[in-house]
Amino acid sequence: MAHVGLTHFLILSAILFSLGIYAIVVRKNAIMVMMGIELVLNSANINFIAFAHFGNYGISGQIVSLVVIILAAAEAAVALAIVLNLFKTYSHINVDEVNKLKE
Amino acid sequence: MELYDIIFYLIALTVVVSAAIVVGSKNIVRAAYSLLFTFLGVAGIYILLGADFIGVTQLMVYVGGILILLLFGIMLTNKVYSVDIRRENSYIIPSIVIVGIFAAFLIFVMTETNWVTADPTFPNTTVFELGKTLLVHYSIIFEILAIVLLIALIGAATLARNDNKER
Image (cartoon, rainbow over all chains, first blue to last red):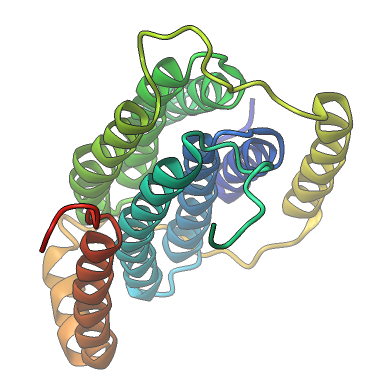
């Protein structure tokens, strides 16, 4: 096996991204869809930091990944509130059966 | 094979296997706990890439915050004791085929492109540089992020409030 370089990290993040997309597409439960979104955001972060490390572009890539982490926290809070409201309205959270904005 | 390579392959194996369990598990609580190992592994990857502060932030925010939020979401929306949690998947075979083609395409692009790389450096700590850059060059973004986080959390609390009771 070759010495670990940029390509290894990129392949790892590609695999993680594909798994996240698979979870978003296949799962019915809204919480599982959120887990897929978190996987996708993590893979994007790995790409940013890998390019910042191996491209010698300074520290800006790490700052972008910090921004992504903060936005992911905000997104998770809002999505959880929406899921709780869905559960109050429908008493289930299957995303493919939720088709009305209000009762 | 150096120690760095061995550690990378161990962490990569952990990340991929636990992410596969997250994606494929029928039990939603098991998927959430498997997500814990994915986040820990990704934090290890960040530290391998010389980004120590981002790794610690990943631990604090993802493992300490988002994962707990997800677990609360699971426990508030599913009756954990009842067997009939509707969590079955749909269109598994076509999704696997399409996502597999997509992953093969991504990996092909990642391996065949000639990336311009330089010799990586491992600074002792990135905290000083990170703080300086964040407050000198990216100060507007820093402030906007603070306001966005505040608004999002207030909005989440307002959305999740129980309106049935008297105010």
